[in-house]
Image (cartoon, rainbow, N blue to C red):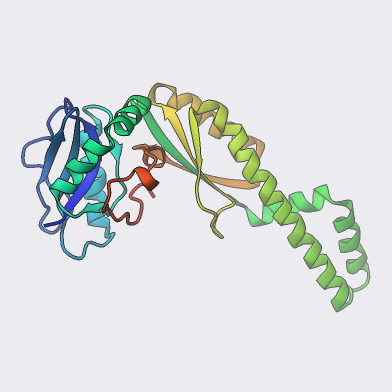
Length: 255
């Protein structure tokens, strides 16, 4: 049977509560696989697993319980290996890497920050910053709305200005917050957000980071900023070539 992987930790990590269940319906029991100085938090993988809310929450709950006892390298929802032997084999093969990551991420949490423009507010800002756009808008108004070509030209100018502002604001989000973080991971571009950035933060410095978020909001009233965290440090495990062989990563549980 395939093995579902929740995370990787030290073999000395405290045991999980007896009878703890994870993903699946009914919930599959969670167990520990040990290999040398490392351990994997696993369970039997359900057939046809999908990112349903119940299972996403179960995945998060296992990581929260495990994280309360010490540092855990979290796998994203849907990490499945061929069998237990595949998992312990990768723990042995990648032991130095995983132990380094455990040391680096000890006491750290992740905050994911997403930002989007408030459409009305950013249009006001673009108008205020561009004498050319203001002049053309006024000329069109006095000309009864302007010709089709004039309106088209104005629209193109506004779109270009908003795009430029998006790029500048995305940079501002990162530059404002990264001094309060220990590492930064920029997420994939999305049409829904102008910025999608994860920050690795010392758990004891979380208040400082959140104060920096407030500073960002105050200095950029045309931005709507969403903060999700504290989370297990998903974005800083360095999955890619260092993930357990044979795993398949599904939708991120941290979102």
